Length: 387
Image (cartoon, rainbow, N blue to C red):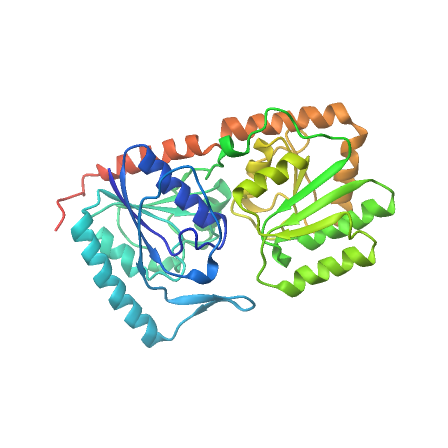
C-alpha cells in the first residue's frame, strides 16, 4: 500500500508517547514493504532524541499548525486571520502531495492544531482515513467530525473509545489497537536484582503525571527505615516543579537516594531499567494508555500504577502488577513496602507482568492489526481513482 500519514508532530519533534507511537507505526509499516509519506509540522521547540533500528520513511515538515503549546497555559490557538491563512496554505500543500504521492489510504495521528478541513480534503478524493486517537479527544469538536463512511477511529484503549462516545463522537465502531512497546529493545531474560527497592519513574516530570506523589511516598518509606534508591527520569515544562521536588528530597535527607537525570534516550532508559526493579506510574491524569508501563514490564520491572484511564487495562492488580489509589502516597508506600516482605510472590508477579507485556502489548501485534485495518479500508467500495 501507499500510506499517507498526517500528524501534528513527528520525531525527533515530540511531546510524548503519541508522536513516538505514530512514528514507530510508520517505520514498521515501511519495514513490512509499504510506501509511506509523512506530512507534519516543523516545530523544533519539542526536539527530543528518538533513535530506532528501522529506516525513516519520507517525512515532509510542510504543514502549519493553528496554535501552539505554552509551557504554563497549555494549548493556545492563533487568531482567526492567522488560522485562515494556515488553512489556505495547508490545503495547497496537501493538494500537491495527494497528486504526487497518490496514496491508497491515510493514517492520521495527533490532529491537535491541525484544521479538520485537511481530513475532509483527503476524504473528498476519496481516500479512506484511519484516525488513531491517543488523547481524550480527536483534536476537534464533535460537531466537526467528518461525516463519511471512509472515516474510521482507532483508539489506544477501550477507555478512550468509551470516552469518545460519551462526548458525542461516532466511535461505536472504533477498534482498539494498543500502541504496543518495543519489547525487543527492553526485554531482559534475567530479572533485575531485588535485594532492595530500586525504583524508576519515566515520564514527563509534571504535576499531572504525579511525580510529587512518588516523592511523598518515598519520604514515608524513609520514615519507617525501608531502604531504596529512586530515579525520576523525564523532561519538564515547569523547571520550578522539579526544583521543588529536589528541595523536598534534600530537606528529608534523601538527596543521595533520589536522582533526577532529566530526559533519557531509549538506550539510557533501557540501562535504567537494568538497574531498577520497580516502575512507579503515579499519574493523577486520566491516561489514554501509558506505554512506559509496558516497556518496564518487558524489562522485568514490577509495575505499580495509579491505573487512571486506559492505563488500568494494562495490569491486573495482584496478578501481574499493583494498582494504588490515585493521589494517595500512603497507599503507594504500602504497595512498595510490601514487595520485599514477600520475595517469592514479588518474583511471580513480576514474571507474569513480563509475559503479559510480550503476549499482549508488543509492537508486532499492534502493527499487524493496523496493517489489516488499513488494507481493508483501502479496498472500501467508495474508493475511486485519484485526481
